[in-house]
Image (cartoon, rainbow, N blue to C red; front, side, top):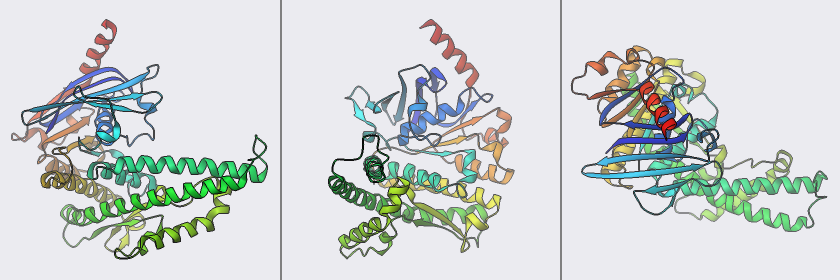
Length: 405
């Protein structure tokens, strides 16, 4: 499977953009500010329903426009499929497959699989936990069909619970502009319901994330040893915010764990009221990277952090590919490998390792300021078809189409 055409309308900086792509390596070349990364981001959004650059989809809509549109044509064998995603300035994102009915994003995420390498990956291990949770979620929506919907429902419940905590706090401490709640008892009862939903959805999400880490960890260790040399050991260690999850006995009664988490929330109640937020739950999960028995965040060098990050992304690619080959989830085909301005950030050794990895994949999308930024081994590899796309020419054509529309 490969992406043959991408059309953007009112997406970020692009009033209109049409890019034809081929199997093999596609290099989008142009100076900074032309919108190369925006094109890569659109492919990522089609795949995962989100962007690693922003939390919400509103910034994806070009200023002054009502909605952004992503249209992508995928080719698998002799079959073509067109995906359309509409991102309104307000309201829910919608999707369509070919000329079918309007769908929710949850109906199409993961059907087009991607793994994105960016310059920020160097900091993935050392940055705040939100970036590592984002990695788990990107993996989850592509590996597990119900994951996206589960994530959305958890986020909704967490938001509603926070809103109720703030209302109770305002009523109790006299800061409510409405003079307090008429019935605090009813609000406490409502909070208990939201807490129960948060625990149930949170436990389900925690279980999925734990499974992802368990599936990734052995691949990650092998990949890191391949990159860094034998004798090196790297592990992923999932750190759930619901610590009680670690006490679950597969053969035991999970209601016991539910009750323990519920008691944990009761102990945190006054603190949650004071801070106006949910103090435990999957939104506070983390992943620890362990290198040769020590926390990589504290002990790894910059070079080792880079290698760990590369190994992590390569491991996800391999897992997605294996899942597809074994027919575990959907018909997404081989993942698309996206390398967004990464070569300028790497030393020669790591550049060549990425080249070696990328040269074995079906479709690779690369951004670079100029062809000179690419390793020579890419250009000189006669067995690897390489298409150079001049993004400045794409921008000129888009501008002409916009003014003649």
